[in-house]
Image (cartoon, rainbow, N blue to C red):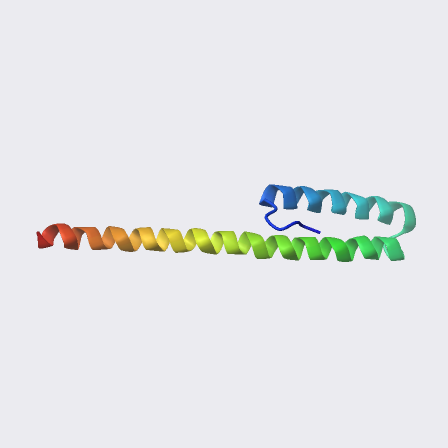
Length: 82
């Protein structure tokens, strides 16, 4: 699993490795083998964690954009007031 502070690129790399392991296992032992299912469940967890982190990052970026837009709207009022 991810360590605290893992970057999105590190998380994506781990997802890629886990997906490759799952597919190799599925090709060798079948899509319904216990090992393949285990890899699939681990992959699901990794993807879920990545989506949580990526969503938070996007949310923070949107908050910064909104703050910036609001500050731009305030500046004309401040300049006109002087």
